[in-house]
Image (tube, rainbow, N blue to C red; front, side, top):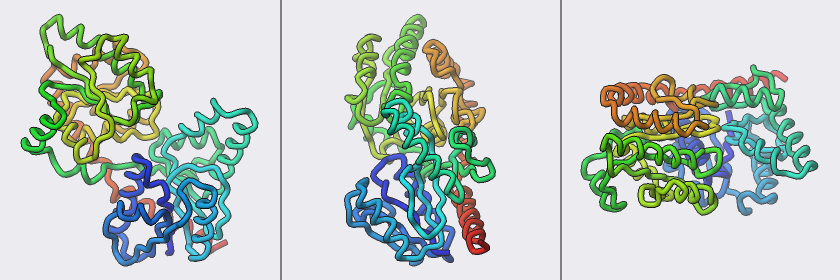
Length: 381
């Protein structure tokens, strides 16, 4: 088969992780089929060295522009590929000769546009997205929850949607950070106290304001028993300045000296933070999958996570599950995990086992089987 993969959005952190792992895994497991990677030449180096059956098709126009969108289709048609895989949800129609499959990570963009666009744009976007979904030969959903969401919102037959789970980046499978690595991070970030950790996007659905409120309540409860008097909350993520409610939550809770925002950190640094954290807290209101809790588990860090959307599917029985809208339930769960050493040890062991259940070799192997089915169906027609 001649398979094209759209890598144009390698500039987006979460999506870049997905594309990078999918492409690299194909490079490890498949030396038979030909792969054509379509995107900006500046992004190709992010994928590392690939075998001889991988080919780069550079695009000249600016990413995310209409000219780039049209150029991508011209390039794909000129190379007569058998299949195109677009690893994200989109809404503009495709004019290509080959069948396409797409990956749906979540429906956040669709739901956001449904709330904020003017009526004409909203209806147009919904209609075009539905057509893209229905015209796809297959849809890869990253969880059972996302599969149900796609079927419900877009009327796509369930048999057309294949659940192919995400898995951990290789960076989180290299074992624990060494004492030297931890000492280096403590010095660089001036960390001299135990801490809770959140890592992920800073956006309303991530529920970070409630994490801060729960942390404030937790500090009050811990003070009664003189436990963890110097406990901090570390928040790693994108720009806090775009979400003023987060800063307001800090001030309202009186936690200005207890909460630290570190912004974005590289994966190599993040894995050390996972090793050092007492608890990883992730009470997100909406997740199509939810990779950060799994990353924390891979490093033996106990996890407190929301009991909604795809998170129960991902963390299984290995995390402490909470109602993400109940600040005091989050606080009580954190207190229990911090103070019950027996529970902590059980959660560490269960988390390590849970993380091993998600493997890129398995997921990408299933993608390859679906590619073959789609191409065979096309040839029959």
